[in-house]
Amino acid sequence: MVEREARLVRVVEHAPDTRSLFLRLPPGERLEFRPGQFISCLLPVGEKPPLIRPYSMASTPEDEELELCLNLVPGGPGSRYLLGLTPGAAIRLTGPWGTFVLDRAPDAEAVFIADGTGIAPIRPMIRRALATAAHPVVLLHGSDGVPLYGRELTALAGSHRLLRVDHVAGARLQDEVVRRWIDADDDRSRHFWICGVGVIVRTLRDLLRRGGYERRAVQYEKW
Amino acid sequence: MARIRVLFESGEPERVIEFDPAKAPFQHDGRPGSILDVLLANGIALEHACGGNCACTTCHVIVKQGGKALTPNEEEEDDLLDKAPGLTPTSRLGCQAVVTDPNAEITIVVPRYTINQISGAHG
Image 1 (cartoon, chains in turn yellow, purple):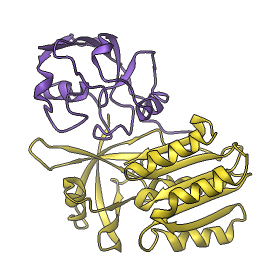
Image 2: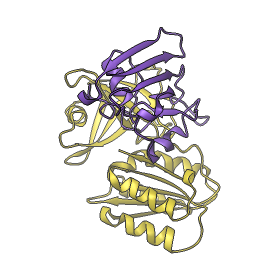
Image 3: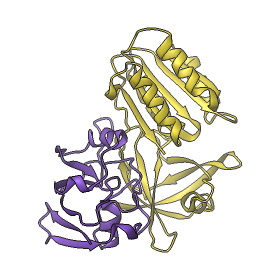
């Protein structure tokens, strides 16, 4: 397990409790990762530090900086610590880790379903999918406020004929999934990548698998 | 007292841990009373890159004996194990397998490698 030390170089606020942290590794170092993977931050927090907390890369492997997009978790010591840092701060990390990945577009329609900040690992996956896609690529993003990366992804859809991006209220995700991909047709060749916080991820997974999609065609990451 | 015998593929000397499952959690990562919880509290640094939240496969262990004394696999654990290197029929994620039997006699093997940390060809 190789441990690295990155520097926080800038912070971008998406909403009062949601920010992107941009990290830079020492000169000459690069984190080779697969779209969808995460790093583990070793945080000097709690009674028995380090506190290990995983954060997905919202940036692509080709970007110069690592972008982590996170929101303040009520009572969560990891996010409270990270969101309290200012540029110049050091962050110890290991990785990349994780098997919720996309290396190339599937030989079928690719559907990404994100709930809130669950868009973070899906953002680089969409970029990779578009670079290799021969079939439609769809993003359904559920949000309760202004969608994260909403303008960027809508613009991307405007310039790629294979990409379709739809934003819906978080509470509508379940109904939309049933309407679009279970009730609408008998096509069960689609591949899904689902990411979000809590029970909604399992709910969507179960709907799709019980709705006739292959288990391995429904990938997910639940935070 | 429950007992976990820990064997290491790396060749490190084996360890035997005795504990009372009713006193879980023993530290803060993994399910309370899980193999990860017990090992970490006893000085065995089993990998757990996701913090013990069933989001990676780095705490993969192979249960050689006493698997019935552990809580059964759930779908999420099986989905992740699917992608674990060196998967066996008795593989478990240390963060999810909870010791419930106060008289459990469990033997596990900690695999040598963790290739969860991989970079694909497109890295």
